[in-house]
Length: 340
Image 1 (tube, one colour):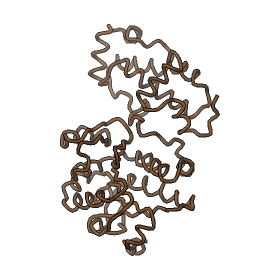
Image 2: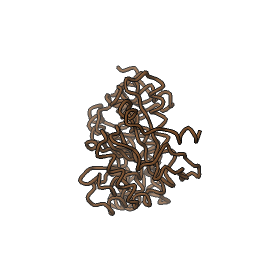
Image 3: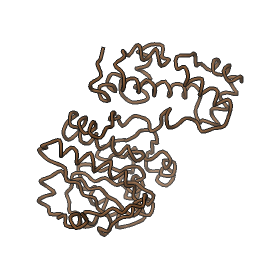
């Protein structure tokens, strides 16, 4: 296999005849970042025929094999510095080696060179650090893995860092959040290039039941429950999760916790980083999103089950949080769900 990978030609004719996607890797890149790009594109080709198929090239500085963060060694299709332009898409992977890669003049210069002629440029996870170092995110809104967002904002104040969405598209530049959000971004690219039906087909083959919109939050009630030993917070969060439709105004939650409304607000600010009302709204919206994905229940029923006064109140909150309506979210996530 390494011999085959090493023999890939960078001929200009083949690059122009196919939709060439260049994936930039480096020492200690994240293998899952890369696979979440290359595998969907391969499956898109398999489910063609496509008028312009994808040609995916994984390149590294010098064309050298890269030891990924997992310890596995990834063979490169060629050298980053030898890729001729133009290319269709360039995507920079993330990984624990992102800061060292961002310090490399070779990496910065050639990512900038490729981006200068590419139809679109993107990063996955901490690959945003490299795009920022290459001055490609100046004045743009961008995201990265939530754990590294504050660091990116400090080091590159010219970048408008938003740690919440799973991916952001700002003109020809896209940035995706942590690891598997590369899958969501790649599916969005496939939909843009070849239509929603192919993107859904690829999603089904990957057994990923949901193609999430970029505006969806990186956090969820399943992955971001407050990590705290504070008894007040635990009582409130357990109460909210056990009955989404129960009264959850400040007075009701304070009564559950056995503290004053003011004290409850102070505890949530210190332990959770948000207000009780914002926490409750986030939990209810996350639950509503899952019901929209997995059930054909009418919107009014979902709203009632999740604690919203009406379907319209849920719709307004959904648009503010996810940038789309519940109906549009359901249509995108579960095209086969029966609508009533």
